[in-house]
Image (cartoon, rainbow, N blue to C red; front, side, top):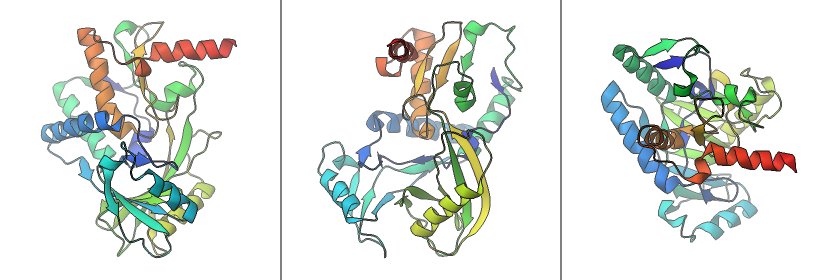
Length: 306
């Protein structure tokens, strides 16, 4: 039985972006060579089940706005773990120092995925809205609570971060690539619509959009796309983070199981982690130690006792 409390959640807000080479250090996302094929296989199967497209592949245009940033990118282009993802250097758009095209990127249409999944399970009779009753057998509950569960303190100290995203309409902007630069990103949605983001806020962990957040994302959008656009939606969500954007699964001391800490990369890691949890539950095949919540929790407790 899939039980959905029906609240917002970061997944409904997220752009669903997958970017193989990330961050200021221009490095591959954690274990992406394993998790991306698992995700793509899963989303293809979901599309057949629900009869709707949910995965849209896009190359990623990584833009450098300064000589220092460009030197950092160029220094990594021959790294063995980076080379497989690089399509090559491309001419930099006006106002940028350099540009590289990265392969293997794309976006998950998170709302279509979630709505189609809900309808699929409703038809099977194994979906209900509401909360899990404490009277139910907690040993059989898998808690997929996202940031709400982390902020409730059930898993130890968290590092959740609020992010704000704008949905834009703009004529003439490039819809063939995801653009990364200026501390943010621009993801085509089709039909002249884009999602732009995002901010990071560690103190005010609510789902309320702010004027400050909007101004920051508009700045990013102007830099990546252009100066003329219409804001058609402004949303906020909280990323579920325990350690960076690396997920965790495992049994809980009080019964049941946890599936959480996907951070800002749930579209990439959720399918592979769900497969690992299923094999653990059904076949007794334990996952790698680095994704085992028991190992993480033990280390956290040791650190707290020092």
